[in-house]
Image (cartoon, rainbow, N blue to C red; front, side):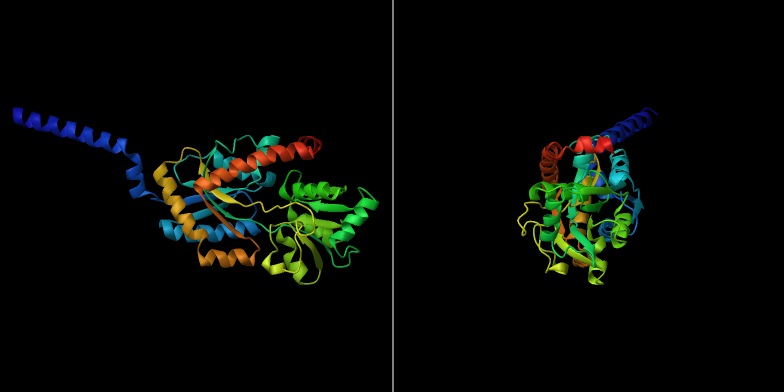
Amino acid sequence: MKTSRSMARRQFVLAGLGAAAVAAVPGRVLASTYPERPITFICPWPAGGTADRSMRIICQIAARELGQPIALENRAGASGMIGTKALSSARPDGYTIGQIPISVTRFSQLGAVQLDPLKDFTYIARTSGQTFGIAVPARSPFKSLRDVVARAKAQPGTVTYAHAGIGGATHVGMEQFAQAAGIKFNAIAYKGGSAALQDVLGEQVDLLADSSSWAPHVEAGKMRLLATWGEERTPRFKDTPTLKELGFDVVVEAPNGIGAPKGLPPAIEKRLRDAFRAAVNSEEFRKVAESIDAPVMYLDAPDYTKYIQSVYQQETDLIRKLNLKELMARG
């Protein structure tokens, strides 16, 4: 009887020590078991757009690497900030991840979303950018960007452009261009790029500032692309100059990335980094990215985090330079 009690006590102590050992190395346990169920991926944009399409293919490839499905959930609105806020508020267990628009570095400082991009996320990978440009209807009198600048200088505030929302990349990019050119536009804000495109096609607005929603219309001869905003010309429209080539020191690429809420366990972070590194660098993703004018701009977590910090400071300066807080307040 005494021996039996001693053995029971010994087993209890050993079990306790085992549990303590497991608790002491949670990362090792998580690394061997994660993921055990499907992962939710929050895309802060509507279905069917460039960002949505690029994220879907990345998730499909990463899911194969992880051995579990990744279900993409669209939570659009507020220039991508509704979904971004939802991601920051999720449990940091690796089962909710999502796309982080670089514009969060601007909107957080403008007070449009209550979060701190320097503290509220675990950054996993920067993925791809967007091809922004200025396009006009085929019948437009503006044959080149030089024509636009000449008219805007001669008649300040009369040239109109459509953009997808105050403070967004298309609005900020055009205002940077206007400052560099020493001109003043009449900016017309829309709730999304689709509505802006339709009004420019209908010749109700002079210019469209957008990511590549204009691409099929340019190829069909319904629109004319005057300039793109990247560091280099886009392969699909290699005859169109960049703003930089035309003498305006403005580059807007707005690369997107993938992240998770802050506090993600290191072992899970590593699994996700490895999976999305493979996905972004795959030939399968590169082909899709090329087809939608989304240049691959991969950065692993440490460099991506540094990039976010750098852009945050740039946005601080840009907000002051363009007086964006006052523009946002006006609506």
